[in-house]
Length: 171
Image 1 (spheres, rainbow, N blue to C red):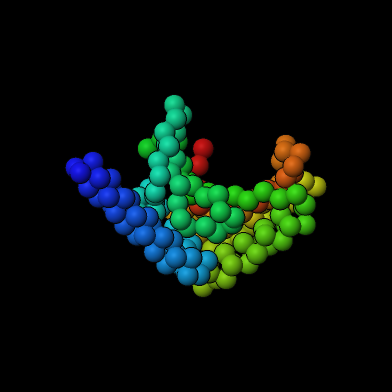
Image 2: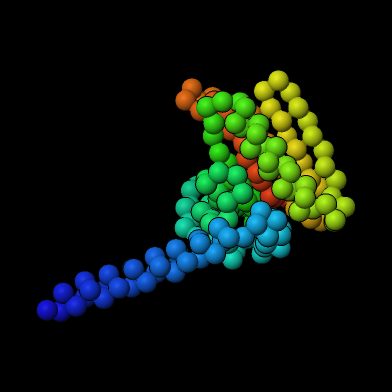
């Protein structure tokens, strides 16, 4: 009987936790990209602590999944050391057109969000890549959107959005 009660209690706890996560994810999904960018920029100084979920530790870095998705559904927060932490989302594509389309969408919503704050936008293009970077000043994290060819034969293009180290501290 004790085992049955323990199993039922454990099931209730787990279902309660997953319901909270589901509610949080649903609430986050309702946010606009601009709300998400502002939240991410605000969370940078605390190493994105409030946005971290599941942690994975390796010899070289710690990373956490996050529910804040701006490009694709593969987003994470990575800490390489105490001073170097980034938020990054990435999506992979079979075709260059789809990757570039998502790059343009990400640039458009980022530009719209930062329009009134005097951010500087720059873009570099080559045959196999595009990088658009938004910089406000030396103390604010940089937002970088990158699309490029990958080594994968199945999905040979990717687009990513990264929020990370400011210009003053990049080395």
